[in-house]
Every structure is written in C-alpha cells, then in structure tokens.
Image 1: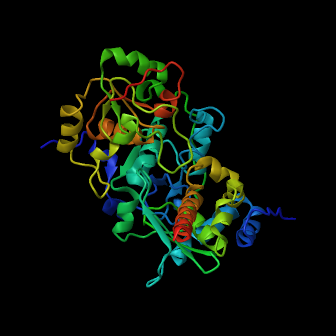
Image 2: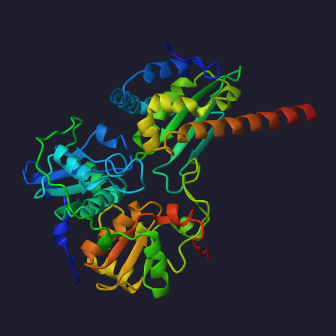
Length: 161
Length: 283
C-alpha cells in the first residue's frame, strides 16, 4: 500500500511510488537511470520560456539553469540545463522533478513539501549528501516564486491602467 | 629546477592505463558525488566512500582499526597492496581517503594525477560493472597515526601562540566569513563565519592547474614556502570545512614538497566555527 500525499502532484506521486518500496541498491540503480536521461529535460532548440534562471553557485560543482514555460492556464513546463560537472544525484533529481512537476501550477510547486525526497533517494544517500538532494527542488521553487512575483507585477500594472 | 620530493606518490594516467592488470595495485575511486562510481569508473577500480566507508556513523571520527582492516579485506587490499586513489573534484576525496589510509599506517599509497576528469578527457576506458576481488588478508592495525598527521581542536588552540603556519584552504568567501556554506544549500555549515586567528588563506585550488594536475615543484614551493612561510621541518596545520580540501593540501605539502610535520585539522571549520568559546577572526 502506497502513502499518497495530497499535496504532491500526481505525476510526482507516481514516481515516488516507483521508488519507495525498492531496496537501497535498486533505488541507486533507478536514480542512475533517471540521471542517464537528464539530457531529455534540457531546453530544446527554438523553445522560448517565460522565465529562465541560469546560475553557477560558488563552490557548487557546475552551473544549473532552470527554464519555465507557462501555458494559458498557467500550467508549467520545466526544462533544466546542467553543466557537465553537476553531480549524479542532482541530475537524477532534475530528471525526476521535470517529469513529476510538469503540468503543475507555480503555487502547487511551491507547496510541494521536501519530505518526499528521502523516499526517492533513500535514507543512506540523504545522510551522505543532505545538501545535494534538495538543491533542484529549491531552485525550481525559486523560479516559481519569481514567476508569481512577475505575474503580480503585471496584474497590478494592468489594473492601474 | 626543483623536483617533487616523492615523485613516486603520483602516477600519470598513461602509466595507469598500462598497469590496470597489475596484481600488486588496487585502484580506489573516492568522490564527492556519491553515485559517480556507479555511472562508470576505471576498469578494476573499487569504490571507497569517504563518509559511508571511512567515517564512524556514531562518533565524529574515523572507523575503528578492525573496521578498516575489514574494509581492506573486502576490497582485496592487503598490507602490501599499493592503493592508487583517484576521484572527482581534482582528487579532494581521493586525497582524503589516502590521508585516512595513512592514519591506519597504510603507506603504499599514490594519487592519480589529474584524477577522474583527466582520465575521461583523454578518452580512456570506463566501465559500469562493479569490481570485486577475493578477500585479502589484512591484519588489524595496532596503532592509528593520529599524532603524526592529524590535529585536534586543543592542539590547534595550543598551536596558535607559536605563530606557526596555519593554512586555511577554503574559498576566499569562507575565509572572510561572507559564506558559511555553499549558497542555495540547506544549512550544514557553521554558526559563525570567519577563520581561525592567525590563519593564512591559501585556497586548495592554488596547487593545481586548470586540468586538475598538480603544479610543478617550483610553483608549489613558491606558493607554500615563499608565500606562506612553510618549510620542510617546520610544523604546520592545514584546515578547511570538514578536512577534505585540506587533505589535498596536506598531500601536496607532505608528498610533493616533502614537508615532514604537516597535520590536517579535519574537525576544521565545522568544529571551530560552532565550538563554544573558540576564538575567531574576520578581516
């Protein structure tokens, strides 16, 4: 029986379900499979975005770009660019979250609790690399905050006209 | 022209490629990226994780000597095996693992110059299949060599009045106290920013070239001897945040420059910056 968290987008919940009952070794293998597919979430040629945030944090392994596109109902599509030295866990999380959060609104993404991460990554890896595993989610939430703030500014400006 | 004091402590990628099958060596990968080994590694390499394998899970210390012996046996490492360490991040964790092996008295240790990145850049083979070896005999070490190569808080505190060289190898932002930890990451650092009083800033990266290989002996002597006042027989202590970057500098000073009295303060800033009563300094 799976634990369903109503605050999690259904696509993300599906991925969590896939991971959560696996032994640690198989979790690692699945994480590597997601990491191998992280190129699939890179921005495609010709794509345009509502917001992009590309940064290399000091002492972080490499640059990470978060690209966000909203449709007419403000449902989001995420893309991520990952520098060649970005860590495997970060790549896997980018791949998982791009899939799992696709179609969510910014508010839904910002409300995602980080407690699901150990279910995917496993307690051993969380203990070992506690700072790495939450990085991508934090960056995606940050992009959503910027997006919402930008929308509010636009709404206020149009009301003032 | 100066040469490395212990040139035998480094192996080049081309040499290793020709010696992958040597029975007397064991290639050991140690990374910051905990899954990196699983994505591909040098054929025959075993994985030793700095935290899961070398650190005690309950006490902030290294594993007990019997656990070290078991780790070696499991990886087919005997007392006479030469361990060649390599890894990501210009060999930070490889140097850390090498330093930990030295704590238990394993002296047949080398570093792959340029580490994992250089091996890959040169298009050399990588495999995903995990390496396994028949268990090797490894007696439980009777001594841990903490006194020679490791410094503890009280020893660092007592070292301060001597004015002996204390080298902070963290990034300039961490040294000045602007950064406590890596930006955007959850807190895992220290309560206060700054450095140990009297410490000189010399980031670890100063010792390597763009390709991750070590600078020449002349360049290293200029950096550490002329630049930081270190010398062969003078006591020195190096530190960073948790002891991994300073292991890299410890390797440079001990093996490449032949300094005999260098100790790594592995408690580093995560201990000093959080310790009640510990004095700190900011520019």
